[in-house]
Amino acid sequence: MSLFSIIIPVYNTEKYISKCLDSLINQTFKDIEIIVVNDCSTDNSKQIIESYKEKDSRIIYIENKVNSGPLVARKNGTLKSSSKYVTYIDSDDELELNTFEEVINILQDKEYDVIHFDMLAVTDDKKQKKEIERYSSTKLSVIDENYLFNEILLVNIASTICAKIFKREIMVEAFKYIKDKKCVFSEDMLQGVIAFYFAKSYKAIDKKLYKYRCNVSVSNKSSDELSLDKYKTICSDLRYSLDTLYNFLCSIKKDKLYYYEFLFLSYRHYEFIKNKIDKNNSDYIEVLNSYFSQDFINEYNECILKNKYYLNKKEKLEKINKKLLPYFFSAIVNGYNTSIRLFGISINVQNKKCYYEPLVISISNILRVLFSIQEEKENNIKKVFIRILGLKIRIK
Image 1 (tube, helix red, strand yellow):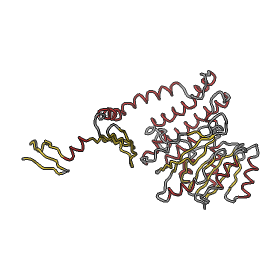
Image 2 (cartoon, rainbow, N blue to C red):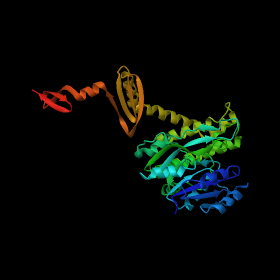
Image 3 (cartoon, helix red, strand yellow):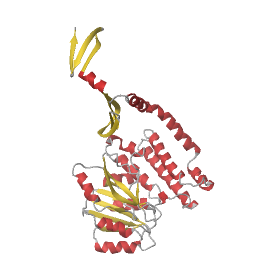
Image 4 (cartoon, rainbow, N blue to C red):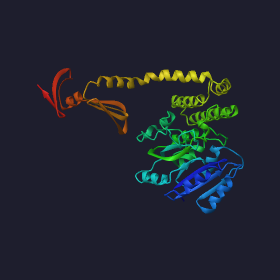
């Protein structure tokens, strides 16, 4: 049994599939199995895959009977796999040759349910830059593991399925809540978010190990490149993915607990497909509105307005920060970060754990710990104490 299974859904990518497979069979860490799921390709993809299979016994070939989309292909590949960990790569993308070696280095210290590495977007379009930085949130290397599901719903962790490695048992459990329905857009968000509900540990690797071919994916195309039917499919698939995710929350009786975060995730994806519409094209707007009503937008806006009530602590912290500006030294510990100001120079340091209650450190606070005179009441009698280097001395 191999340690890692790589599942590749393939549909008419004869132009790129060789590069994808080359990036896998030539990995420096060899204990992998490569599961290729041909989703009824009509080009030469099958012949290319079979030629690789003849040369490398680690390649397992599956052929879907009907074209079912990448979500079903990933599910079929996952259930066929036998490794401890699974990862997914689109057939037009690539992995750096040392990807699994980097992951093994992480796993030597501790096992993780999810390992997330960074992504580099590339394009063969000569009109664009050859390399484009792409958001993947792996800078959040310190995350409170009790709030993994909150983090992905609030899009602090990218909800895409690529550039992540999961324990197989987690993904098998997640697929129990996903029907065998064809879905070609936002399907990875659905799969990834549900999987994160069952994950208890997470580690990010701040290295660009996944090469994402951004000019091929429909995700990066706007309405001037998309037919009205294609845009309708995008809206329909997103609606289906969000409805399935909400049904999942209901089935585990967590819909009330996570409703705000779910609404936040939904609106972020709504904004994404809305921004695809060029020049306020009325036909595309009509399609969008048929899947996302004004009631949905109003509900989101109302939730955001009400949620500001809970942001008072953050606003107070910002006020404290401004008050500390005149002092030559201060430090504010909040969340995952510590902001240190020394002689007007600001330095940000990442904490080893998350602090939900903000802590302010200044020279006056330090001096108060070293030496202070305080008056306290004991049994309605006022008493005076001197504190010196942590010692408490009563003055009679």
